[in-house]
Length: 104
DNA sequence: AACCTGACCCATT
DNA sequence: AAATGGGCCAGGT
Image 1 (cartoon, rainbow, N blue to C red):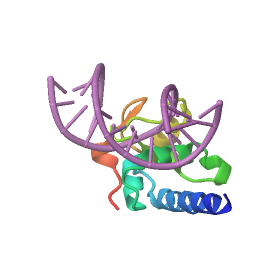
Image 2: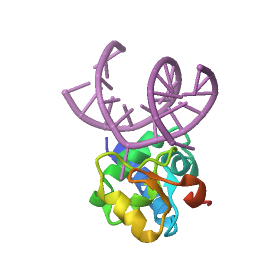
Image 3: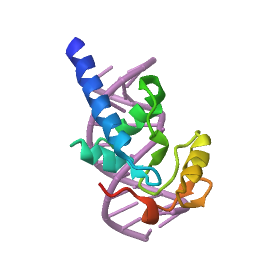
Image 4: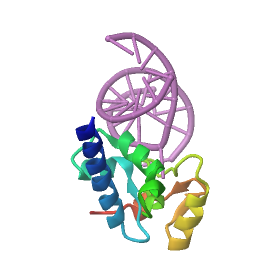
């Protein structure tokens, strides 16, 4: 039980430290992040963690979108934050991945 | 164990 | 990047 909790926290830390690396004006996809921490097929977990990111601290989780550039459902503030950074938006719910996807 | 859910991804149409 | 269908993985009932 205890070891499981520790492993989870380690995973969360890895995810958040990658998110922290995303430069202003760029966005990354969940799958991208999952790949960077060596868990390519675990993009869903990344989303899960980010949904609770504020619980762990302040991270630029608004710079993370899905593979189609769609913003997180049920989080309207995200679009505003991105626009303020100068991220090109296709519409209120999609960013232009082609122009602003983060290249690690 | 079985089943459902989700801030997902991919190939196909 | 629109709609569908199938796959994946972790958590919760």
